[in-house]
Image 1 (cartoon, rainbow, N blue to C red):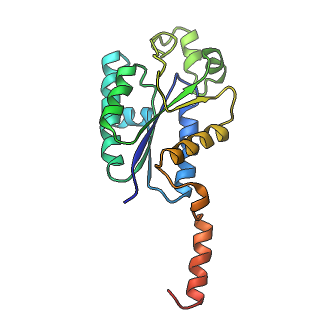
Image 2: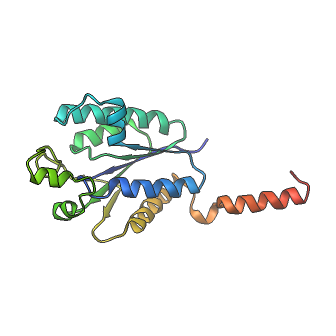
Image 3: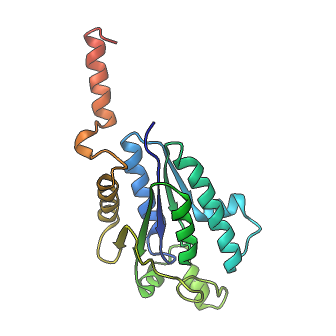
Length: 199
């Protein structure tokens, strides 16, 4: 069975967590791994639609993400989580409960996040429609010992994803790319073996 692991992308809204997570997911799938991408917003919408944005509600959503990731990763799945998990205690709990845990801090200034604002969240905050944005209205406790710090104002999405893949290889969670056949390579080998009558 493949070794399962969990990559937890943490950072303030619009820092790039989901975008990098999606790119990493593509790379891992391309290498033939079983991957589940647990976006916090999707999990909240489907499992916790009753939750609001208090610390207690955020804590509960984080507990649910941790539980799902723990089950999946111990069964050989590469789990990607994009969730602010704004308090260190939330992320520390996940680290204790999940084997092969990687914390990736997606670091970006609040000013840049406000410029990006893909979901219009900061614009709503400026208009006074919301007052619960992590790192602005509510605390965001920066990681102290993250395995990765992804500086999204300095590096592109592809470069950040490459940093994640390199760390996973370094930790022994995935095989280095030099040792991996692509799906196209495997198809060619299979076709050749069929032509030779071996399969």
